[in-house]
Image (cartoon, rainbow, N blue to C red; front, side, top):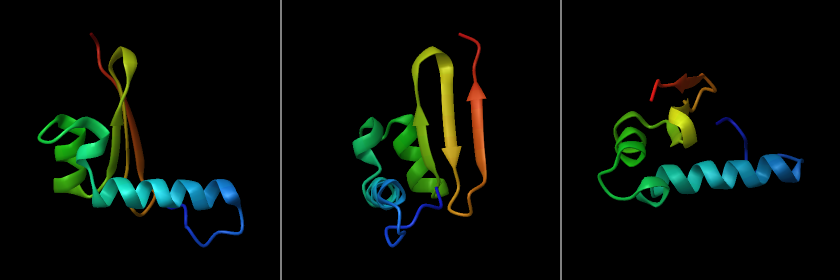
Length: 71
Protein backbone atom coordinates (compact mmCIF):
# COMPACT_ATOMS: atom_id res chain seq x y z
CA UNK A 1 0.00 0.00 0.00
CA UNK A 2 2.93 2.37 0.42
CA UNK A 3 4.92 1.30 -2.65
CA UNK A 4 6.07 4.20 -4.81
CA UNK A 5 6.19 4.41 -8.57
CA UNK A 6 9.48 6.30 -8.07
CA UNK A 7 11.16 3.48 -6.16
CA UNK A 8 14.53 2.23 -7.42
CA UNK A 9 13.10 -1.30 -7.26
CA UNK A 10 11.03 -2.53 -10.22
CA UNK A 11 8.68 -4.60 -8.04
CA UNK A 12 7.87 -1.57 -5.87
CA UNK A 13 7.27 0.61 -8.96
CA UNK A 14 4.86 -1.99 -10.34
CA UNK A 15 3.06 -2.30 -7.00
CA UNK A 16 2.78 1.48 -6.73
CA UNK A 17 1.30 1.72 -10.22
CA UNK A 18 -1.18 -1.06 -9.42
CA UNK A 19 -2.35 0.53 -6.16
CA UNK A 20 -2.73 3.95 -7.84
CA UNK A 21 -4.72 2.45 -10.72
CA UNK A 22 -7.05 0.59 -8.34
CA UNK A 23 -7.65 3.67 -6.18
CA UNK A 24 -8.47 5.69 -9.32
CA UNK A 25 -10.73 2.95 -10.80
CA UNK A 26 -11.97 0.74 -7.95
CA UNK A 27 -14.67 -0.95 -10.03
CA UNK A 28 -12.01 -2.95 -11.93
CA UNK A 29 -11.23 -5.01 -8.81
CA UNK A 30 -14.73 -6.28 -8.11
CA UNK A 31 -17.27 -4.57 -10.36
CA UNK A 32 -19.35 -1.42 -9.87
CA UNK A 33 -21.19 -1.39 -6.54
CA UNK A 34 -19.64 -4.63 -5.28
CA UNK A 35 -17.90 -5.05 -1.91
CA UNK A 36 -14.25 -4.32 -2.76
CA UNK A 37 -15.13 -1.43 -5.05
CA UNK A 38 -17.33 0.18 -2.39
CA UNK A 39 -14.65 -0.18 0.31
CA UNK A 40 -12.02 1.34 -1.98
CA UNK A 41 -14.28 4.24 -3.00
CA UNK A 42 -15.57 5.09 0.49
CA UNK A 43 -12.53 4.37 2.65
CA UNK A 44 -9.65 4.99 0.23
CA UNK A 45 -7.97 1.70 1.10
CA UNK A 46 -6.75 -1.03 -1.23
CA UNK A 47 -9.09 -3.95 -0.67
CA UNK A 48 -9.18 -7.41 -2.22
CA UNK A 49 -11.19 -10.40 -1.19
CA UNK A 50 -10.08 -13.84 -2.18
CA UNK A 51 -10.91 -17.50 -1.91
CA UNK A 52 -12.04 -19.19 1.29
CA UNK A 53 -13.34 -16.00 2.90
CA UNK A 54 -10.04 -14.10 3.02
CA UNK A 55 -9.92 -10.32 2.61
CA UNK A 56 -6.93 -7.97 2.83
CA UNK A 57 -7.14 -4.19 3.15
CA UNK A 58 -4.23 -1.74 3.10
CA UNK A 59 -4.51 1.96 3.97
CA UNK A 60 -2.36 4.62 2.26
CA UNK A 61 -0.24 4.89 5.44
CA UNK A 62 0.63 1.17 5.26
CA UNK A 63 -1.76 -0.04 7.96
CA UNK A 64 -2.86 -3.48 6.82
CA UNK A 65 -5.63 -5.81 7.97
CA UNK A 66 -6.17 -9.40 6.88
CA UNK A 67 -9.50 -11.06 7.65
CA UNK A 68 -10.53 -14.69 7.51
CA UNK A 69 -14.28 -15.10 7.57
CA UNK A 70 -15.88 -18.38 8.51
CA UNK A 71 -17.74 -19.73 5.53
